[in-house]
Length: 346
Image 1 (tube, rainbow, N blue to C red):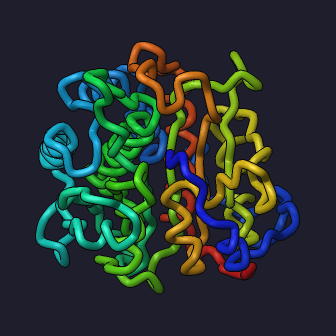
Image 2 (cartoon, rainbow, N blue to C red; image 1 turned 180 degrees about the horizontal axis):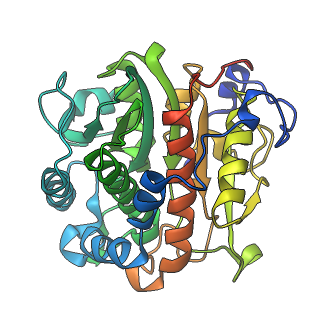
């Protein structure tokens, strides 16, 4: 997650609204999952063992901390694209590649100093009934690199989000192979340059592969593998932004939580006036500023945040599994419900 705050003038773009209730509106009629064989089989694809296997690669020392445009980041990207190829998940046809170049000049104009060219990575499952409507599941795959010869592996930030997106993609692809693919299309978006200024997601929002008007939601995952001191040992996740633009998204996510692992959904940072300003500090914000509903899933600021101790052996893989399953279930509901979720709060 980006350490430097986005200026507070951005607060004028989005206005906070009241708390949604589980029984509120059309969102109280979730897509059935209880006796849904396709959902259940896909859900079971998400497991701690596979998350761990991928994270030990993504956050290995030889990835050199995955700094934007670095050799190590490109190596991690190659692992990810090969993963999608092996699953049979294609790149977007409109892009013609898994890679969307984010030019050095674009980042430099936004304070990126002398960062080299880098790439967003996109994988895509086309919807069976509403293919032009896009559900985005995102995470940044860059970290802060190597400092004074010490590798900052970024296992939680944001290796955990990276592998969660990969695992969610695997689950949706399993359903598709069983003939029960999502009704809406799913874009699995791994963005670069987050740590330097949300550059990859900003570039995508200004150069979208799919029209932003057709983008239904962004479920953004940035640090979901550990706990913070205030929640040590708890089964929880922070959720940020889910009711800022839509009266339905928070309701859908809470219903998905009740149908799955029933984590404690912590809304401490779900406040435009919170001093940490986390709503503006990860990639979902570049969707929210275009009036696309977002939910940001987060585990908090722990003692290894942006430090060399953020290593894969410190991840709670069982909790990472549960959080990933929650996000998958939320995406499943949004992708398969009859009506697109509303944007009714601006």
